[in-house]
Length: 325
Image 1 (tube, one colour):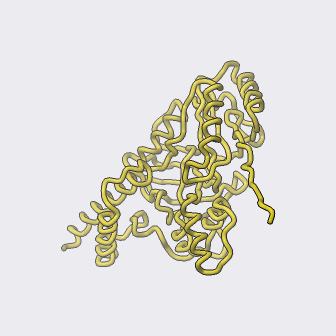
Image 2 (cartoon, helix red, strand yellow; image 1 turned 90 degrees about the vertical axis):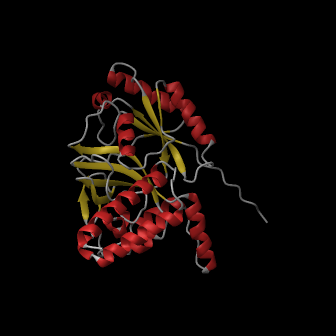
Image 3 (tube, rainbow, N blue to C red; image 1 turned 45 degrees about the vertical axis):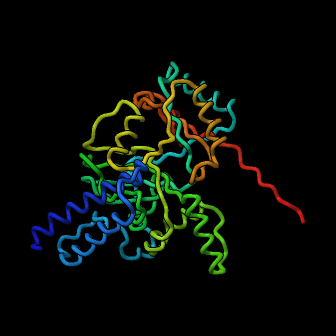
């Protein structure tokens, strides 16, 4: 195979692998068997080994790189990653809505309801469609550069699909699936090692490993929940439209999200979230409620530490029973 022929095939393989990653991780609807997918990856690896000049940073073969430095470099977020105010109980949720109505002068047109994932908040920066940086939330202004480790997470696209914006900073929550946590602790038991305490702390520790291959072995995943900064992209009227666009770009957005038009529907979502919290392969500790219209978000504004247009409804802690012997 000539170099030009190899270059064409390499691009075709990368496109196919990106497509099948999207089908598997975003749509949860794979089109080919794992063995067929693995064959595509092996062919790409072989061609890149034969023609190293064709290797690029956003190739799916480049997820796991060299160990990171002793310190994670500080990263300043393009837009502050605010924390959210918490409410507990329906009465507190209704009080938040009354404050929101006072700030807007009317009831919002719609709300989005999103499961609050018990994980690690990060920002991902894409330039020209390629992932160039991943950072932890940190104090909301400055986080830590964890790009090398986040690149190893299969559900994080190294290159976006379709027509990508010039620059985009998007926020998400990295988590460890419950099934992956169980598998990890089963291996710990086989080795006679102490078990990990919970999926949330294990996910956070996995992202801050000095060796990206350790992160890669932990089967982490991500749900995206917000566009923090956008340059050279389309204009949107609401948060729901932004999330649908992120999904088309190949980013993973939780299908459990819902857009509703009344606080009563929000309360119904909260009740269902609590009833179904053990039916999913990830841990949740609440529901994030947001004003959907971006113009209404801007009108509501922020306090010193949190947006007025969003709130985290905390689910009650789960009761644990201790048996006395």
